[in-house]
Image 1 (cartoon, rainbow, N blue to C red):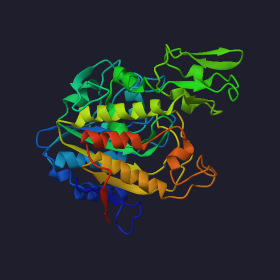
Image 2 (image 1 turned 30 degrees about the horizontal axis):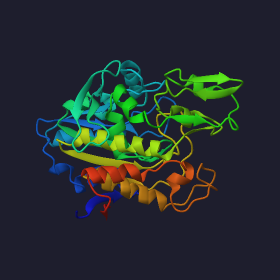
Image 3 (image 1 turned 90 degrees about the vertical axis):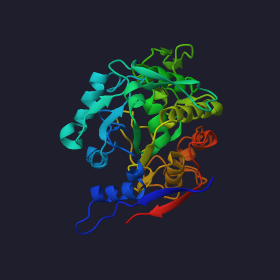
Length: 368
């Protein structure tokens, strides 16, 4: 397979230029205009930001995508599926409130928001996965399944369960219904290190499945109830919770790749990652930590595998920011594993490449 083209623009502007114009140049150079949008429904898959988290992408950027789709004759909508865990986006009403609170409304973005899997996260389409090894039939939010074109617009960051979150996680995990998310998470069940646990109860309060109890001022996770969503890993203030085995992390990544395949396998897709405010944890938390590396820029490609690999390489090429979660950690050049040692971010890309979704071999092209 020949190298895929990944297009990159930094966050510098001068004169009459601005970042919105630069994003438009980037996506046009990367080939969004080669997709047939005429009279087609285009799902712009985005994370609206958990209330309290401030590292989500600004809604102004999404308007550039919406306007471009409209110019190319398409009908755009912003979308995401409901979450598996307790929080501000667990049903469509709360999810819409969160989106509007963070500025994702028609007056800013120029289009409507549709919560892909409906009111309670049960409105799903069952899609057979081509070349699927672990998922035979993916449970995809119906609005995303019904779309004619998929556009992934992702905040690239680290993640406590998958190592990193980019285009593949945005599409795969983000498009799954609540049942689909449970299927993807089910192998990564965490354990508590009682030597570190102080019994604060934060994990118990944030568990959507009542799978955690406090016994003798120590948390215990009951795996027969646990859905494996990983919320408790990120919420623990004492780093006392981690998944038990590396292969569990890999299995989550394999399933994310297969869910991504289900979403994009029979329709055109386009992918944008912003490597800015690179936080150590998922944006699903109601807070965000300081960025671990300097802002890099915006990336776009028709190939989600090449895109995520280029963004990971770009992050690993950056120095750790002083005072961040990465600062001072033992680091052999893989920042993601330095922050989350048990994770294996590249396993998702390897599996996606194996399935034929793209290649990790890329050519990086700079857009001014």
